[in-house]
Amino acid sequence: MKWIKEYRMSKPTLCDNLIDGFNAAKNMGFASPGRSARGVDKEWKDSEDVTFACLPVNEYAETAQSYREHMMECLNEYLKSFPILKSATGRLGFLEPPQIQRYSPGAAFFGEHYESSSRDIAHRALAFMTYLNSIKKGGGTKFVSQDFICKPRKGKTVIWPGGFTHTHQGVVAPDEEKYIITGWISHLGD
Image (cartoon, rainbow, N blue to C red; front, side, top):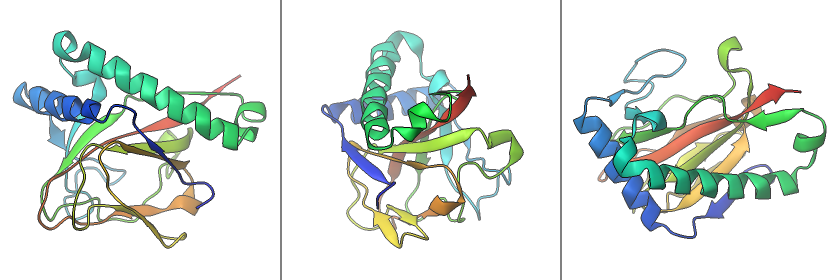
């Protein structure tokens, strides 16, 4: 799994705060059915999504900042493993806010997909995901070509290339809710 890297969050209680933020945003009407390149299609992706930008600012500004710092630490470690990403591709950064996603028991991102699969998202160089809760049965992420299933553990962040070589899909958790935060590192140009 050379290009799929896993990192541990130093303060996994941050995951609880992010779930609370998701629920607060949902209570304010900011949760929406999960979308993909196919639009809203529950047979392809069955989730509730809240964009990171919709977390209530007053209560969750520190939580959002702490998660950004965690992601920057993970990204810097990833870039140490693959320095070509810094030297040959121009600047990398965030063009889209991350999303917090909730999957009910039995739901998942069923469809095999990759993160730069159309012209409007071709700028995505890397994808990341943090599992916000541990799941006992199922609930992971299956990387198809690598024949690898990433296990869902609270506070685990995973970074991987956004291209077709890293096609993946969610694994159903039959008995538990699954919470993740996911997003993308994009090519910003020179």
